Image (cartoon, rainbow, N blue to C red; front, side, top):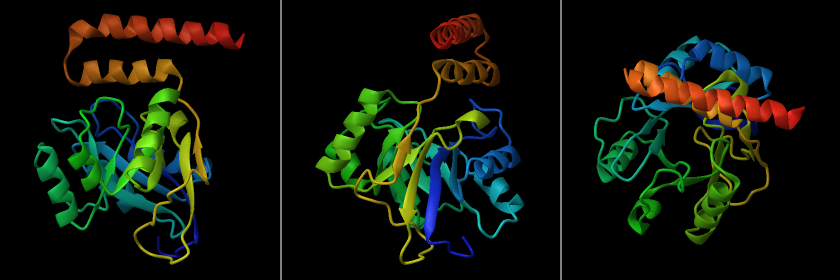
Length: 238
């Protein structure tokens, strides 16, 4: 962030069309992030930094910071790297962490209790733990918070947005007193906000994944889940 505004309002987990389960463009991400009052975002596409690079290039606002990142699939679950300048080549967890740190990046453990095989070594090697994720359940986020506290790891929040309406649902507000290029993450919940993604949007991203990966047999099931979830929500709010 070139003007180094001391108050950072950030969403550290956003996907674009360069992920296999999202269609939103980097330009759309920038637009809606600003509408929602954010001044910092990390674009963390699956196994790719293309979305982050594109958003960084087209961002012409000196008061808005785009952090280039990636969410890498490994044998123990997803690992996020931020402040990257190259794609992470390995898919083995310890090598992924080494690659991120070799680039001078930071390692985030996202949604620890959703799709992970946790072990102490993995947790210790991570720099930050995502304690609030809009696509996780209340209980999964509670366990993530307890994990960060147990291992005395800094906290981060991310919407895990795959659609524009999700951007900023989870955010962290940080007083960046040192005006440093790399953000110093908090060790408390103060300034962290988490609002949850409607279930039908989670199923919509699974539908997109089935289309983009050619898993056409799963599409009817995905459509059923989207429709059922949307109707249930409609009835709930009536």
